[in-house]
Amino acid sequence: LRGQIRRKEQAQAWAKPDAALEEYDYYLRGDRWFFRFSREHTLKARQIYAEGLAKFPGSTLLRIMISWTHVNMIELGWSDDPGADADAAWEFGAAARAAQNKSPLESFLSRWQMAALHYFCHGDFDAAVAGARAAVKLVPFDPYTRGYLSYVLIGAGHIEEARLWLEESIP
Image (cartoon, rainbow, N blue to C red; front, side):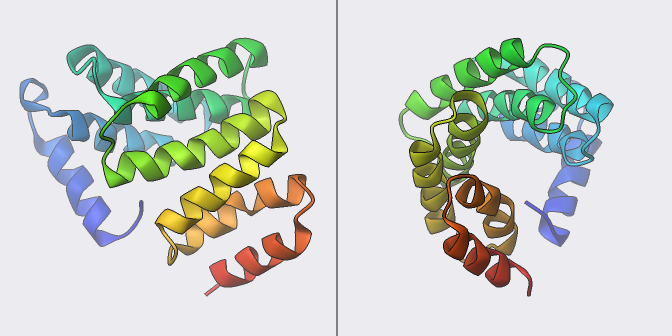
């Protein structure tokens, strides 16, 4: 989700005229704002993902990302209505999770997201841990995923495993 290749892809997506945008371009354009981690940027990302979903109504990827914007609003304390954000996050996330023939990226993001949804929206720590482990299994060498998802393990009481994930994420 980071690095030179990603920056190049984002620059290419932003260089395209709006009429030529594909589904993945909306994803990349939204991510430019999503990863700035502010309320305003999260809402800007949601707007871009929603524009893409309007153009590509079958998009699993854009549903995942819209759901993530709602999760961030809850997780980072920006939501004016956490219940409504939880409902929206779950609705978009469940629709994405149920989609058939997901790409490897969609499968990974969906598992990561469902871990967060089970954790933040339902307090189902067993399902959250299963989702976190499944996400990490899909990208076993990605330190960012391990480091980020370690909070799920901590919240569920898997402290030693979380410590290992954090240690593995440091290098």
